Amino acid sequence: MLKEHAKLMKVFSDSGEIIGRKKLQKMIYIAKKMQFPFYEKYDFHFYGPYSEELTLQIEELCNLGFLHEVKEKKGGYFQYRYSLTETGSAFLDHADLDMPDMKGYIDSVNSRSSRFLELVSTILYFDGLEDEEKKEKVFTIKSKQKYTNEEYDEALQYIEELKQIC
Image (tube, rainbow, N blue to C red; front, side, top):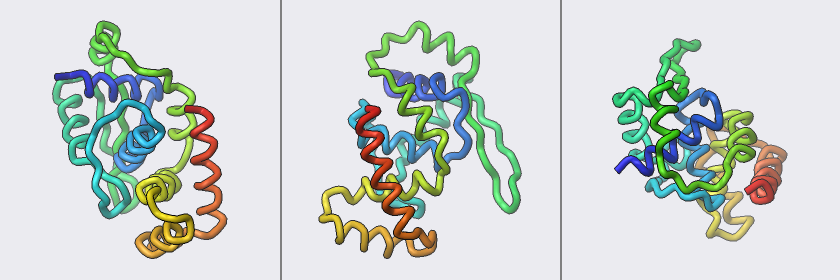
């Protein structure tokens, strides 16, 4: 039952801390697209790919005392910080987890802004489309974000870099 939860705990163990629910959603989605063994179902939502399943798993990990969640007031909104607890770390030490090394991937994506990861994950969500159609789709559905052509190109380049890391 906790195998998928343990995979998430490994992400927190490797990252030290993840700041933001949106960033967490995008990190796991992108990891899944990079062929890491995550199986949460994603749908397209306000901020790009979103998994209700992942949200519930994180809530369960917090309730079990394996994950520490800190809610901070930041400007006009709340921001959440997540880190593995000692109990979570002890559980992870005993978990029979068959996961590829994700540390390089985790360090890379965790250093990026959630806004940028939203763009990257949205591009990956529409990876079945032709390049121009994908770009048009992203710029249309993400018009409020006001992404530039340069940011789009940077996101494409970053996806290629991630493929090399993974």
